[in-house]
Image (cartoon, rainbow, N blue to C red; front, side):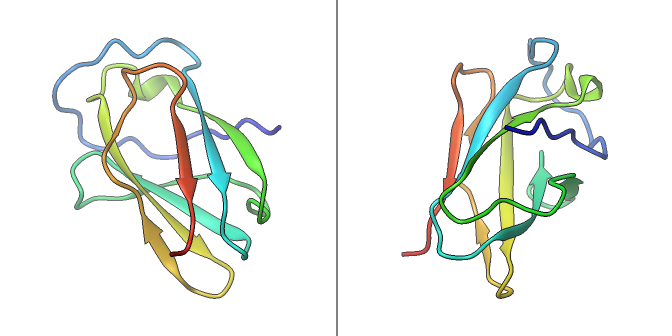
Amino acid sequence: MRQLIVLAVLAMTTPCAMADDYSFTVTNNADQRIVSIDVSEDGKSWAPFDIGRGIRSGDSVLMVWDESTDSSDCNWLFRATFKGGDVLDSDWVDFCEEDVVISFDFD
């Protein structure tokens, strides 16, 4: 598994006790490679995660928050862009919970 680091810091709101090296898993249940993942703390401004060459269909990848997000809000949105150009958004994800898994799947 590769560790992925957030590249940009979004506006900070309510502080959260995110631990150093807080990690979560992204699972690609779609039939296409994920080519990019973006995150948003407010649903308006987005910042990319570095996912290298992407996340293959059927793979799960461990991702790690950058320490600059340690004082951020617990709730974030994710969106994945796929090789074919489709974009899927997640629901709000609470990162103050343990063992967070975000799955992207076409309906």
